[in-house]
Structures are given as C-alpha cells and as structure tokens.
Length: 201
Image (cartoon, rainbow, N blue to C red; front, side, top):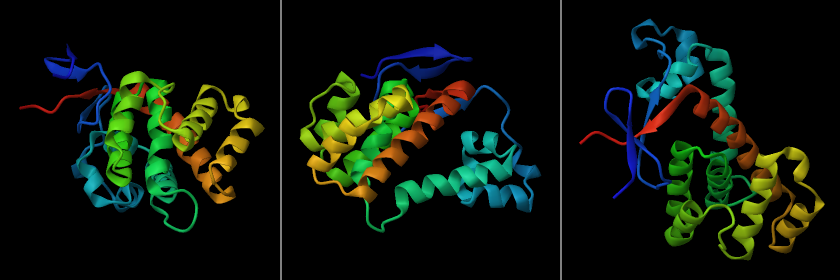
C-alpha cells in the first residue's frame, strides 16, 4: 500500500515514489476557466489542459505557459532522430527522483515504463534512487541527468564520453540534456506551487 500523509483538509499526499497516476493540489488559486481568453487558450496549447490545476495556475501568464509547453512537447514528442522516447522520459524521471518531485517522477516513470517495457528497472530507480544499477546505457543517462540536476557545472566530458560509449550520438546526448534540464527546472516550479495527491476513491 502506498504510504501517504494528510494535508489540506484531508487530501492524501503520497510520501513515496510511485508509477501510479497522481493528482496535484495547488497552493495558489488557479486561473478561472470561465475567464479564459483566446490568449489563454493559445498559451494552454491543448484545450484539455484547462482541466489541470497546474496548467490553469500557470495560465495566469499565458505567454510564458505557451513557450513552456511548446518546449516540453518538442523535447519529449519530437520523433526526428535523437534519443528514443523511453530514455528521454528516463532522463526526466531521474531528475525528478533526485529533486524529490513525486508527481513529476510518477508521470515520467510511467512513460519510461510504457515505452521501454522495463517497468522493473524504472521501479528500481524510484525505490532505490539515482544510484540504482539499471544497466550501462541507462546508468549513463541517469548519471548525466543527475549531474545536470545537482548543478550544471558538474556535467562534463566524462558524462558525454559515457553516453557516447553506449552508442548515443550528438542528437541523442542533446536529448538527455534537454530532458534532464527541463525537468530540473520544472520540478522546482511544481514543488514551489503545490503538492501531489492520491486520487480520491
């Protein structure tokens, strides 16, 4: 059973990393859906995101939200060359695990499992942390993501060499960097604005 604690009027907040689908509870008031303008809808990019408290909170600055969302989509959904989707998600999951963002880790771990079919390895990352042995290639992706997340200056030639040794070309290495760097920033934003919650029922 997932460990959890009670926050904010009975909401159950998970305290362990999981691949389960979680909710997210903002500490600030999201933008009201009824007040969305064309500019806000453009910033959301996907209309379905109007149902997300996180994106509706960020919709208070729709131009920045739009830039953020398009960057996110290009990093993870652009299929042209570079890293397989599973390992882009692994980079984001590793950054999120290091930073303690249970919500982001759950999302990207779930995607990493879906695209890689290596659910046991993904769960090992969540359970044991970023030092878990996931095999040489995934270890190299995690190590690079961790170095970038701890402080960008820690990422260096040795990480590039380790990635190249596992067959990653320049485009794939850039994808590792982008996935980790974007979520290193996104984790900090999400952690400062709210907390994950277990689904009701």
